[in-house]
Length: 364
Ligand SMILES: Nc1nc2c(ncn2[C@@H]2O[C@H](COP(=O)(O)OP(=O)(O)O)[C@@H](O)[C@H]2O)c(=O)[nH]1
Ligand SMILES: [Mg+2]
Image (tube, rainbow, N blue to C red; front, side):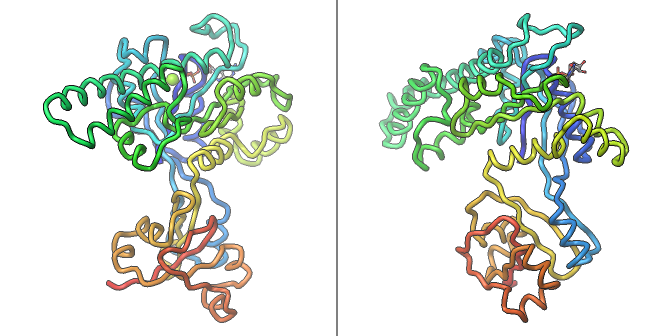
């Protein structure tokens, strides 16, 4: 999964990206001038660590990963493709979710492009640019489909045009596509356009240290202005989180307690992304070579899980042997679990649960 960090200039995007890199062991790769920085982070996973150290004792432990992209700032006019706008918008279309960093800290030394600090206003401003970008995409496509229909009348194109017009009317009312009622077929058609307002959106309020541990009315204002299906709001003091993350672990712990910081910024961002994208984690480890965490969409079947591991497992799928990681821990080993009768045998349509340890039996 790929998460795109977006926002106005000097809101803390790059500071957040650095925090994620420090905490997630991400190695930054640059793909040239005008290209955003990208890093793949390791998803911290205490369950995986326990499975490896207590049960499988493997040669190799492999964490699930999450990719983050630090985009160049958006500004007014970006939605119409001004400046390098259209180049950046095209890149933004390639992510699975958008993480919008909003400045909610006071610092007279750092100018705000819009004058005053007002996170709810900024959230709406950026949202408007995304709506305009989508409107532009939809209108261009409408033009093309209408031209095609003049040449030959195809049932499919008629349907697409109808859908596009529904999208246009919705966007004109300044409503994001993620809130539009769509059938699975509609979604399939729209997927190719990768509309920005169809993507899950995580709003991250970058608060000043003084706001830590206090109720923040801005969070409620944001929820009211943009909250809804596929949107989540979290708050984090990004600069402080980065400073703490760079400390040796024992010192970091002390500072965390003193400042009243929670689980850690990285963990909070990841949890929010998993929830927003509807992801769950399952594990493989049989054989002792590698204990590994995998990420799949909630609701995925055992066959989908097999496919995530290897296409051979999907093709030759016979059955899945399944046990939840806490039950496996209680049993001590897969063999002991089998003896106790707590290792379940499931078919291809079994819906994987978060924390399942799965061994796929398959024909080669
Ligand atoms: N006071 C304060 N400054 C911050 C905070 N987060 C970021 N900054 C500062 O704001 C400036 C811009 O941050 P940066 O992450 O580069 O912003 P970007 O333009 O959104 O990538 C830098 O000087 C940061 O040190 C914060 O939580 N509090
Ligand atoms: Mg930056």
